[in-house]
Amino acid sequence: MKKSFLLFFLLIPLIASAETADEIINKVDQNQLFITQKYKIEMTIKKGNRELAKEFFGYGQKDGDKAFMEFTNREDLGVKYLKLNDELWIYFPDADDIMKISGHMLKQGLMGSDISYEDLLETEEMKTKYESKFIKSENFDGRDCYVIEANAKVEDASYQKQILFIDKEKYIPLKIEMYAKGGRLLKNMLLSDIRKVGSRYVPWKIEIQDKRRRNSKTTLVFKEIIYDINVPENTFTRRSLKK
Image (tube, rainbow, N blue to C red; front, side, top):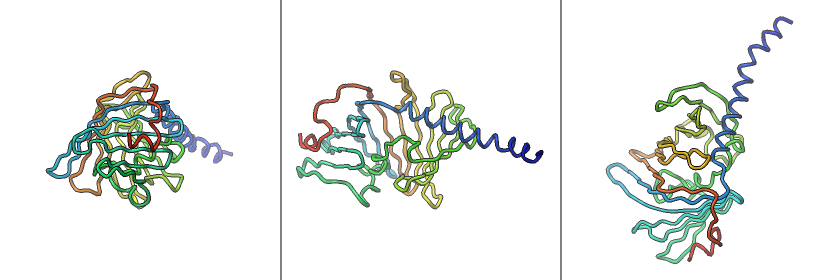
């Protein structure tokens, strides 16, 4: 009886940690929920001493998991992307051609950046693809954070494991480490310049480093983001790519 009583108290921290992790991830997911969104982004891609600057705008719709992006910088003017659930198309204006991105191409970087096409497709709530557990509390970038380990529970997850440093007050990740099955660190993501947009907290600056590439970093800076607006008709259709 004494052993069972002691075992019960030893298990309480483990049970509490698991429940706390689920609650934290749920709050992270809730903060990111939207019906529709519109955004404008400046993207900088650094590879060694080379730097590329790009700009694009886009729309998103959570119902049906749809997204549309169009590049506006001179070199990529008119290049468009369309995401419909787990399918992704790209339009090249010079060739007036639409191509579906699939298979091994999904591992490639968007416009040569550290963001893969596979990353663009993974938009589900965290809890649908990962089992989470509380690791510890830690200060990161001057903020008190929960450190959560999320392990993939489905085969089609882009990463086997993610380590998230989540702001305890705003419930938004400030740092995410992404790992392969063998435990290799694939990418680091830093989220900063956190601003409140309506009821949500949004990072206006995101930095991604693909650790498989030498001296490579992609920075996204939001110039505008608006939620729950009316999206132009037929935005999320293949016909919109050739407009």
